[in-house]
Image (cartoon, rainbow, N blue to C red):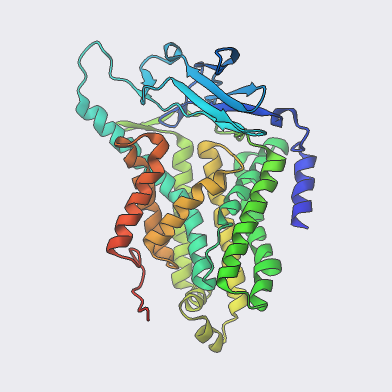
Length: 420
């Protein structure tokens, strides 16, 4: 039923398989400097034998796309002479050789940053400080978005004991729903985002009411449910790929904004607004868990479901409430991630590893641990680019996870448990 509903929505709003922009293979990318798009940069794509396939310039949103005739390996070259004054490629690699697979679009990464000019001497101290502060802010910004998804995942694990590998698809669901209502229905991003969060919460309730709750009644084991969640994640991901295709899309609002200078860094206003919304939501959920009766019941179910049931708490109703909240939080994370970096059918899958790392680092099943772990992972992901290539930045976050778990296996705020 849900699949039919999604299919009808996508067809109604032009996402059918016959959409012209969704056909065939392509190379694509987004040129960004400090969160701001870089326009007018020339990109040339050639085949391995040197024949030119296409040449484009990045648009006002920093995006470029070159369709290719077939799957294969292609040479992508960025003309550094067309970069705006003061910008350069931070990895000094203007030429990439990339494989493109059948029916998909391959993204080429060209990290862009400020250059220290060859003319007058430049004091590296302030530049280095500004770079570090910019990465710290970006890490906190990313950490807040991870925290929204991680909080719901941690609550689900705490009440059910389920490691839900389909949680990332709830993030993608929220972003896609907001995209439909924003781009095709014509609603502002803020209104579309509110609708997407409501639909995400409803989707979370729907999943537990007609799927996970049914599996609990059949006493399906946690290992079996975890494997089922992997299958569900793959199913939802490829449904999104079928209707949405492989291109990265943008909302119609807030694509490019001039930054506000705050000390040595420039921050887009949309990022500050998203930070404020994320903080308010996270604080509200955290206070509700501590102060309200439903929050106390949720913590009771998380600590000991059998004792909570014996105390008169409706365990199934609490778990359903947790799924509803988790779905809404994941959808909100998806909307914000879409504003931050665009919408793609793999966006939830790509952030899921960082969400799992945050939950594990903070302590499995602890809501406040998920918040703390998310901020640590966000900072580690961004600050690691000071020493390693941007393409490998997730490795830095996982290295921090491994080190902390070796020292404190239960996570930062997790409880010690006796085994055996």
